[in-house]
Image (cartoon, rainbow, N blue to C red):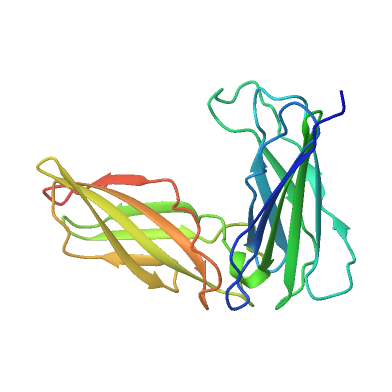
Length: 242
């Protein structure tokens, strides 16, 4: 029996030069791999750009072809450096195993196309998207977050920039603080900032309450997105000065 061949293509809208997502599946027989769910970000502008996608489970062995090219240049295609999942047996069985690919030496103010194709015995599925480096900037979270108190109502919050943001003197960061507090069983959140310094004194807080602090980082000129929030640091304000 001749092999079945089905091709499905979905083109998402293009408005004002915005990113284009193209999802394509080709089935030769059996069940093709799902279209890779690709996420790209630049964690150290403009040097470190990564794309990642989860490895599907319970499917035939799947391999990937990941390439990128400049959108408005002659079609010169570059291969991404693929990094397979670690398959660490000590990690939680419920956590996703992620593939990564590195996109080195991207240029500023340039449209790029990323193409990730999953291939197995059932066929292939492709994900294509266009992006500019400036739009996918997302630093890693700040590190070494510390919270201390020298009174019953004041706190000093300090942190350090993410260690891999290597061009801090050329591309400075700004920061937001988020803290949570519980009052009579109700938890509320407050966001403060942005701040260009790496320490902030907060005054007029309520003695006896537990506060949880997190910090995120964003490129100073608002390129891309804020980082994920840092791990929370909790502190209880004493009712009387120690």
